[in-house]
Image (tube, rainbow, N blue to C red):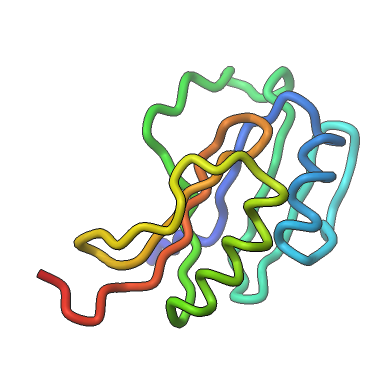
Amino acid sequence: MRFLNYILLSVADVTRSQAFYTPLLGIEPVEASPTFLLYVLPNGLKLGLWIASEIEPAPRAAGGVEVTFSEDNDDALEATFADWSGKAEVLQKPTRMDFGYTFVVADPDEHRLRVFTPATNPR
């Protein structure tokens, strides 16, 4: 059986990405080199950041891909927004949508990071 347990993002500058992701995630990478970083999140999901110039085959434009984090409730989402909005470009302020309460920020390589709490009464 296959499991989705690893997300790999291409980045332009590993040092800049580490300076962004370490305080954002609140954890240190478990692996760090001049071309690669690896974070293991508390739930076991791995987030790798690999310098784009070293990836083979070369990455293509990603399109509408988002890395998504869920929160337990709206208060937790608001707290995360307060923290992350000072560290990242805000693309969407907290907004109520059909699927729940959400916001979106961008990392230094313009990868979209979405945080949401599920709607309690989805339509």
